[in-house]
Length: 139
Image (cartoon, rainbow, N blue to C red; front, side, top):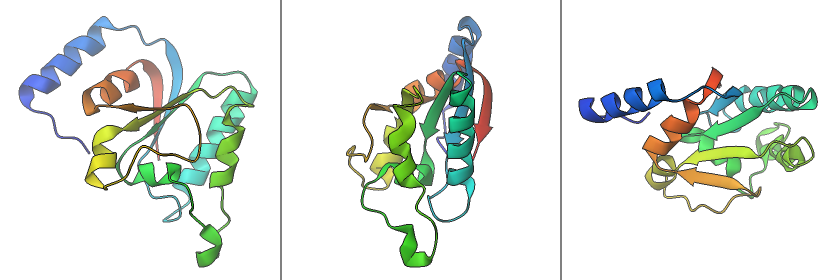
């Protein structure tokens, strides 16, 4: 999790107050893909909401960024590989996909992902994007 100084937190709070929460649902993914079922649960919710034309944005931070890295194989640990389903985002019009740049840097990962249209944001911009949503579900 990103730690903000008191001044930075105040700036983010002021920005949030001035913003309208225009987007319906944000799904914040912070768990590694095969450590538990959180990533799969988040994916299921995203596809369900999108199938009913509800606005859904996906956010990845912390170990959740590993869900975007190509070449992973859950079958090695006898887990069904749900990451291939991310390719369906385009079909469901899920276009707002954000990843925290600081999380990538902390894990020495590049911004080369197995899906397209992922926006890499600074920690501050990541937080501001998240604040634009009425509801946030954390996985």
